[in-house]
Amino acid sequence: MKLLVNLSSLNHPLTGIGEYTLNLVKEMLDDDQVQDIKGIRSSRYLDRHQISVLIAALEQGHQTDQPLTRYLKKMSRLKLIARIARKAINAYREISFRFYRNMLKHYIYWEPNYICLNHQGVCVPTVHDLSHLICPQFHPKARVKYLKAELPRTLARAKHVIVVSQYTKQSVMEHFDLDDQQITVVPPSVKSEYYPRTASECAQLKKRLGLPENFILFVGTLEPRKNLQGLLLAYKLLSTELKSQYPLVLSGKKGWLLEDIEQILQPMLDSGEVIWLGFVKSEDLPVLYSSATAFTYVSHFEGFGMPIAEAMACGTAVIASDNTAMKEAASGAVCTVSAHSLESIAQGMRKVLLDSSYRIECETKGLEISKNRSWKVSKQLLVAALSNLNNGAQI
Image (cartoon, rainbow, N blue to C red):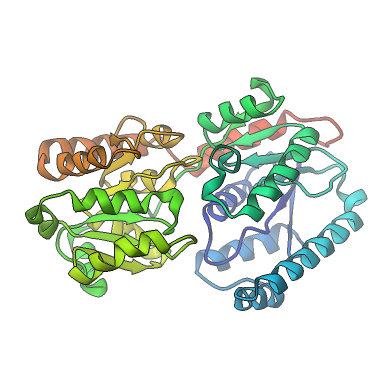
């Protein structure tokens, strides 16, 4: 088959959708069933070799943004100007896309990031979750408005739909006129770099980052959806002795609506019971996961919950919410808690930290589950779904 992919999410540092796109495209570059693959990014069309070069640069942590995109990031404080400029970029991208439309009409267009561009041939979007409908309070109003307007249009003309979890599949079927046969689950996986690291590697990272011997870890953007407020308040319920033995370490950049979170967080940072690392380089994350005594991820909503899978692959016991798609990421190998109950979260932390037998059981189960996860398997599911589509496409 001939495949066209929107690569606009491939910017450094990669988001979750960017990681999903990069790893699946990387696998498809060497797939015999993919006769040709082209990418669209910042109004440019990339061939197979150019896509490989882009992926290699991103994996090495290089900045690959176009000059105007970099300029917009620097201008992020001037929101109105940035919004107008983004609209201009999108309009230009759409015009460019139309120019190539006839040439590419026999290509299957896979859109990894929700909203399809205009394409004459087969369109297949990936829907990561429907949080903009289920819990819109966790998103900026502009994003909710955009997705509410555009996603129904995309799904109405989609030949098939890809989702990242069974939970999202059920959500799409409930909210839109789609049946089981029209949707394929292609879950994310973890990179091969995510595996238990040696004590020496962990010790070196702890020294470099100024971390204690034992700690509880959270990895993710600091924003309301991740339930940082609940995590911090639940952590405060632990005994003074337990908190002194296991400080809470936060890794991730600041998101939006942080006022309430920061009011709780700042005194805990001042007292030393919480350590905030900010953004941690992707190459350090596997060692950071491996270094933690336990990993906490008590989010209110997730389309999958990649950090859960990453921590499991690194042999670390996980405390996670029992809601949405996180059950699928956990696969019965983690300590599940209620995101809405501070005592439930606190009790989960106590159980994992104080019961070494249970903690080791979680670590062992997590590693066992991780053996069956790979981007190659996910790619095979995606390619199989795309290969079944032959309405106007050359397979």
